[in-house]
Length: 275
Image 1 (tube, one colour):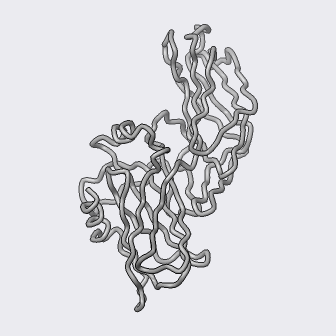
Image 2 (tube, rainbow, N blue to C red):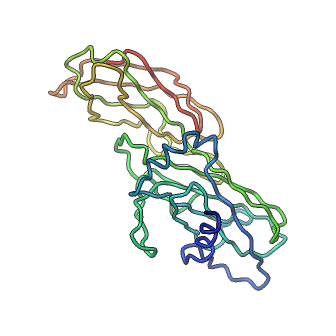
Image 3 (cartoon, rainbow, N blue to C red):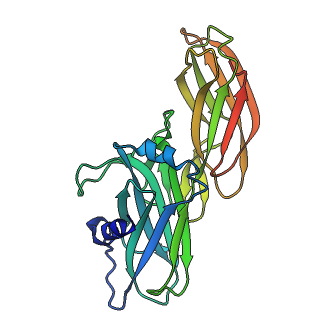
């Protein structure tokens, strides 16, 4: 498996650099999803199935400036190897983003961005703010700084999720029979842009709201809502407001959850009698 991935990364036209230098030396960049992040490996592999694969994107920086274009590799495996050729004895930063895309039917096919615009890893942006209760939104990122680069440099990137996962779970069944749909909003600025290089996020919206989320007709425990929220290197919190509506779009009840703590690469669950 390792040799197959290495051959793919070395030979694919997708990962060719457009940096031409006479004294460049070859080295390998090993990229893999962190074991802690993929605690349940089977669930991620099952999510990919036969229809999806991981898109690994590598950018290389020197003195804060990107060298050449992005290198891209596609794989159903949770690790890949990039081959890079750079001038030695310099300091570089290797930046990687990995997300889930539709599986290609041909090697020269380029899948469209699904949930994230990844044209610039210093500014990864959420493509759509429409709610989609799908783990296909999952993604991973990592950075490695290498000093005095040479052909013997060890370059390993262990990727982790750049966001927190928020879940709202009702445990008591629907006690308000009128509630057929819901909206979820955050009182703090919604971070929709993530800088992989610095591990920081930024906001362009003062308020983020997801509307018209259906409420399932379940009398037992059910997950009402999930979301992936960009979080920087520091833990943070937000206030979550849930409004329930009847079929006529009239509000029937509201739940406010203040100061919900969220952290990168962790799941936060609001659980109890919600409806």
